[in-house]
Image (cartoon, rainbow, N blue to C red):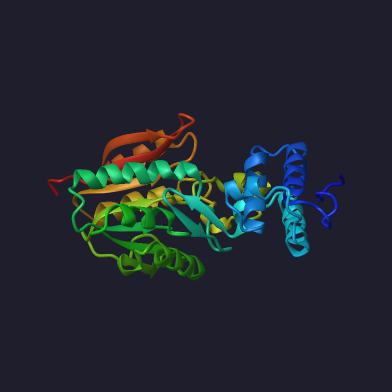
Length: 297
């Protein structure tokens, strides 16, 4: 088997192509070769997991085999599976991707869970919250689905990202409560106008962006990655802006990068916010911070 191929694409069964792809990804050292192969084969041949087993001995349609061959080439070149498929599952929904959006990762589900906890403490009534740097809409849409009386101001500098996020909101049935706003941070919003702010901002130090895994560096937009010289530019802006925009007792919930807990917590507290909780991801890494504005303001 040569690099970038899964053998002959003619006169092969679906099962044979699946096994060849799985082995090619294992040989290339990918972290999740079995999952990647299953996702690519199932999508290519419009199968679910059961169908992949039941139809393994069926001949693969030539056009499907050719398409899988091309997708294999892209995966072996380092393109993430989500980018190849054009979508990524996150929390309870599937999100379409575009060149203007970061691909949502499982680590960010920790932020959604922490935000949901904060919202529930408010009684989850008619909350107006902002999702800053909305990207695909993964965070805001997930929270809107959990809290059907809430509304989300979806903020992003990229018009393309806002278009993608709105389509994802429509697919999840929450578009009537999803309010796209092109802008930088919270400058367009009034004082004390929000019950909460959530954000997964860019937090990679500029010097480290070019050293990221090629699957990230070459396929996620730099705008969503580059956090400035020390990776903290967005946190400086968000903590100061949230202090003005949050109603008394309002919540600021932030995803953070590895090793940033102390610095981001200091920025929040320096802006007059009260730290409430740090939530770790499944690897035990501090991943999300919860601050509140002073309810005596």
